[in-house]
Image (cartoon, rainbow, N blue to C red):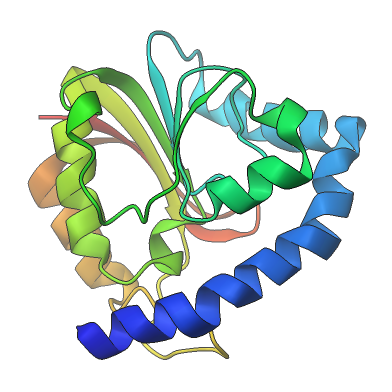
Length: 190
């Protein structure tokens, strides 16, 4: 695991930062693009109420409120501080447990982030601990077992991932190949 964490820290995170400083910044700075992109996704998800947590937001938090866990958040918030002024940021990897938000969150969004970390099962452990009873989480990810470039891998194929998810959560909706992700799932805490 130490080797995976080091590769994530020394190679994948600098790659992510460079991406978001260029292409991602350009896309997410376009208000029409940002709104249309997320409106499409939220039409599928449905209404979101209560305390929210965005795990792995990239350069711009999806919600203009609540909590964000983003390992590069400190760097991103310097690039566009106005995007970060209304959220509580934890600039930590999703694998690190944040005790301040345990049993505090009604809705968690993890869009294209769980496969960018180094231990997806630990992220799921944390998600379970953050959610209130009957809380909802949306996870959208690609399921890869082989590394592509510097990007760490989920380390599970789709069947393994779904099996683990179904042991931990009730599946409300599932769709494949939606909004540029291999799989998107709406889950309820058991």
